Length: 206
Length: 206
Image (cartoon, rainbow over all chains, first blue to last red; front, side, top):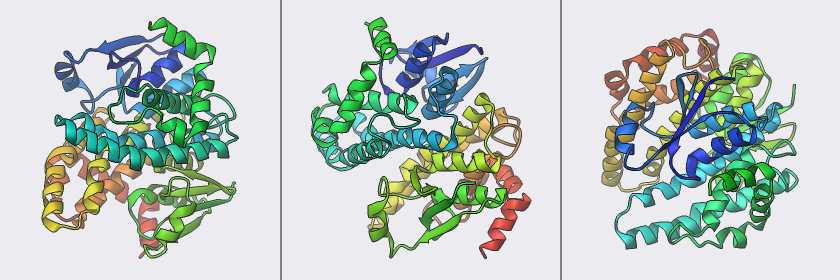
């Protein structure tokens, strides 16, 4: 097994959680390098795109979260071998990234009214669109898992995103928006949260 | 071999070109379904995320361009089997998508001065950043190819993006920006353009 070091912020969400979950669930040893926001300005200078997550594999840095998730998923047995099922898995992961695009600018807004307007437009527009579309894609795959008829990294990605929205910690994004527009994704979120390895991870972080 | 139908706009660029190139270079038969801008409003309603490209594989629709590229790359022998090399390949493809994020809003701007300001800020900011970072990543892999020491879909993706920027067809994006900031990517673009299968594809489209 290669020597692995995952660098990401010191939070159990965002773009680092899927690889952390996959490594943990697969029993794969890795260095969980958590960067504080205070360390960030210095830390980012040496990173491939000045961004996290970054996974070092035997000392070689790899960037871009979904590629890292895919690598972790292969090691942990959570990525489909069949090309069609892999494409379904990739589709759901990239759709979540697309859904996040419209949100990121609002984190940099310092004016509260500006952020409120941006977040409300985002919730009404792209967020609603991606929630509805992803729920339909889940239904098209049978309603339980996004690919391969079993848990894959696509499920972990959608789960962690839906969990974040439903946590109510995103100002001006209604925390019940998933429940209202995509109840299939709420059931899916509960299904993933109930998996032993997922429960064990979050318990270990308390 | 599955029955393949690729739906994308009627242009030899954008997010559809990598899969078209890969299928063509791999000698893989596919229906090249080209949607005109006039057909688009009606066409998009039936698509998984109301977006293209979409690849139908034995009648099952798969969305998201990099997943489609990966699937095409597997069929055409242009995607690494080794997980680390696959992660390098994925990294470059997703970096190009990240680089495109800041450009897309400007296509919807109807005010020319607004578009000029947005494009100039984009060229100065994210575009310069990603060009420099991708050139450094290419150098870190040996300077010739982005992964696996050979042509992969990552090279096709970066090539088609750089080719587009250098074509001078993007208003207010300096067509010499790649030459000035990332000459390694110009040499890479020329290297990919000189490949027999790539040349044959573009000749077939004239």
